[in-house]
Image (tube, rainbow, N blue to C red):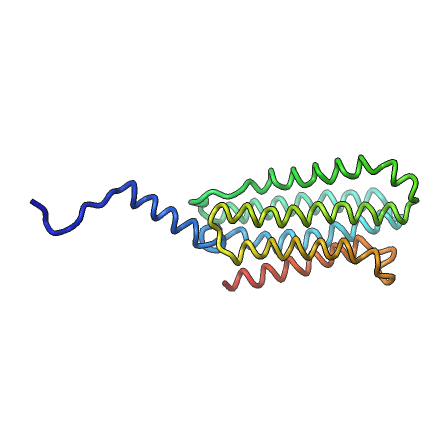
Length: 207
């Protein structure tokens, strides 16, 4: 004899709740993720500007120290952001593994192009390195957007990566053709990334 209520399967209920949580978006289930756009955007803008001063013959040791310091500060800030929130209930792609894969691809491409760089001369070699690295990073952002779709992440968060990847590809392709950017290609590239990342942070933080 029953009391008029249906039996509830705990396993089915848990699976349904997990599916709902997985679809509510990074801002809800992973509230720290959208803050990374701000940290990484500002960090990228500063780091690329330092690289530009390096190419322009700036003092090497201070630039290197500032570069390493920025990387360490960014890592520390992101670690503190993660620690301020509960661990995610749904899975996500490993961002660090993704970053290592992107950096490895850039490294392999640049090493393979070393003979070409020698032929081109310094100015064109710098431009080719920027275009090559930008193409890899832009494609990596688009791929991350696709990966997030497999984890039922909301469209707004995926589109941020799609837009970021497309914007980086446009920057990498366009900057060498802009006469005003000559000699400051990396600084302009970093500024462009910073603007897009900060815009993504503002949009996602309000959703």
